[in-house]
Amino acid sequence: MRAGYHALFIPGPTNLPERLRTAMFVPSEDQRSPDFPKLTVPLFNDIKRIFKMSSGHVFLYPGSGTGGWEAALTNTLSPGDKVLTSVFGQFSHLWADMCRRHGLNLDAIEVPWGEGVPVETYAERLAADKNHEIKAVLVCHNETATGVTSDVAAVRKALDAAGHPAMLMVDGVSSIASIDFRMDEWGVDICVSGTQKGFMLPTGLSIVAASDRAIGETTRAKLPRTYFSFEDMLKLNKDGYFPYTPATPLLHGLRASIDLLEEEGLENVFARHHRIAEGVRKAVDAWGLKLCAREPKWHSDTVSAILVPEGFDAGKVVSHAYHRYGLSLGAGLSKVAGKVFRIGHLGWMNELMIMQALAGVEMTMRDLGMQVEAGVGVAAAEEHYRRSAAGASSTRAAA
Ligand SMILES: *Cc1c(COP(=O)(O)O)cnc(C)c1O
Image (cartoon, rainbow, N blue to C red):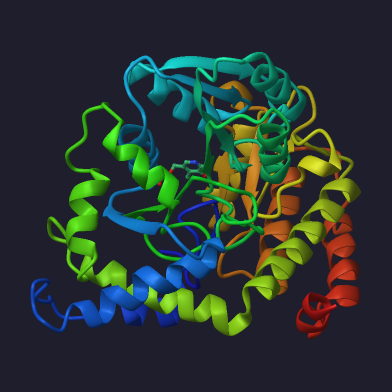
């Protein structure tokens, strides 16, 4: 056994703050007791602030992000409904694949991996759809496989410009609570998340934020649903209860997570993620390597997918880092397997923690014979953090 903490830099599950771990260390509870709603009712309200929404409802299912995708589709759509989406990474691919399996009529625009949602093509498709056959437009806010963040607000603008009534659905699994997201302002109808990324908890809850409009669609939506039924959930949630046994320790964890995020201040949380991510990007640059994200406008503040030079296998970086140094990195998935390795820098993370990952990656790359000079990436990140760290977050966010 290796002494010390294992260095966990995968893009989920993320590091678990001690305060959240202890918050979940509770005895089993009576989920039908008169006291239970004291936990749940404030939770249902307060989590809305994380999504920047003032109405609608946030559904909390025992499940993971994938279950949240299914809840979003089955509660609001009918078989054969037309859905517009785009595929540019493993997660956008999987949600599209789920649409197909549910018998939806999918228009999935293929985009090179390393780019994000093709807003102009969306705009064309929406403008051309005079009969409003498209019922939902899907956006993967942060494609975790490639480290690409897309512009959700621009998709809202495209919908409005076309005067199109389609619902806007967002996969926010690796962006919520780490990258700015505005449910109300961007007119998002459903945003799917989970506990194990920005919320800094173990996997176990699908978190599905739904607008009043999305909830209203349940009366028309004919896709079969039981476990994920919004209607069943709402009937009991309104008094603080659930239609089946809730994951009570995770609900306590979520309570503590929201409190922790709000103590730091959501805007400060976003600024911290940006600052840390910028340091990682400076290191990548200093190594002479490129990100999978093709342009700065796509840069993700929660995960960086780094391309290895021709002739090297990124899988070896991941396995060597793990075995030699006790460092977990994200592997390349599907189309970019062997081509990228990923550093997750979201959640309970600070500058000195990420320096550990950067040092480990640098040592690994040198061990594997890549042309990387000792210390250059770490030095570039150090200088960035020296300039930007020291208590700068609150003043920056206020500015
Ligand atoms: C992690 C992730 C998912 C899948 O979530 P699970 O909790 O693994 O089911 C979906 N979308 C994105 C963008 C993710 O990062």
